[in-house]
Amino acid sequence: MRCRKCGKRAAFNMRHHKLALCEDHYLEWFVAQTERTIRKYRMFRRDDRVLVAVSGGKDSLSLWDVLLRLGYQADGLYINLGIDGGFGYSRLSLEKIEAFLADRPEAKLHVVDVPTLYGETIPQVARRKLRGRGKPCSVCGLIKRHEMNRIAWEHGYNVLATGHNLDDEVAVLLSNVLHWQVGYLARQAPVLEEREGLARKVKPFCRFYEREVAAYALLRGIDYIYEECPYAEGSTTIFYKDLLSRLEAQSPGSKLQFYLSFLRARKDGLFKEQAEQVELHPCPVCSQPTSVPGPCAFCRLWNHQPATSNR
Amino acid sequence: MRIIHRDKEWELEGRMTVRQAIEKVGLIPETVLAVRDGKLLTEDTVLEPDDEVKLISVVSGG
Image 1 (tube, each protein chain N blue to C red):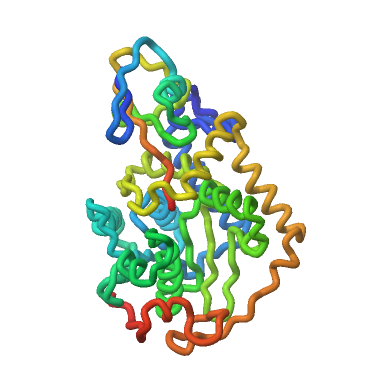
Image 2 (cartoon, rainbow over the protein chains, first blue to last red):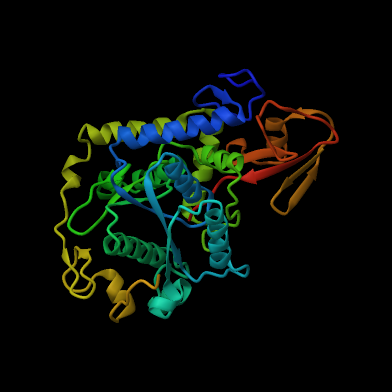
């Protein structure tokens, strides 16, 4: 297979785009496509301050790399969740990020250490609260969302970028459709606008297949954590991703079509009735917006006054 | 040829494409990248009997 641009040996083929490219042209294409997505959905501009949530995985490190290459003001945020899994998952994740930073002295990283700040690791707090039937994923999501927003707010970032890719988005979409979670469908979008103390949330990789992001990381020489979070094993998301990849293997482009058709339907107002904004008010403990009366879910989780960032 | 994926290894006989090799070991081609001697391979690349190919899983998330 030959590169469509220069005729050299192709390194990567995208069946859904009918496009094969060599290493150099693939890296060039990937960066240009990211910029196109950022502009198409009006995610942010060069004068915005962007905080990239980095986990040490391929998606977030690649996103940070691309944003820096494109000249955006993009700093990183790593949240140490205190997950070990028998191989030091959280420690290994931070090591990958530190290796990434060693080659990019201009990049700035914020670190939130959950066990140090709040006295418990994610698995410990999940066990104490008996949430998630032995899996700390819902507690983890709640803590990450709160801390991302807190750091963005405290340090003056108006945009919060995550490395969610197309496979992530279609897995969530399938789950929401299977359960007809119309409220969630109304809120699933490449951009969630900022409101009352919540930074704008953007997903610049939402149109990239997971395989495309992995190829970018590999070809760019980004050393990311291959090991999966120990709690992700057997998750519903991975099951849905597997189902959708089987569909994609038979019918290239199915995932992209599913997602883009959904976005069109959403734009045309299919979920307009469900998109009514929930009224928010500041949490009396941490001041972050919450929809429930009294302290927010995060503050109720700890039952104590949250401290501030340690770095 | 030798196919390696995570902690598993397979020995396959004869010549075949990357896509055929991936399917032969029971994986979905859309969920892995194939690498030989540090180079990314397209799915139509024909593998020789003495090749060693590493399959890198691209799926993550919980």
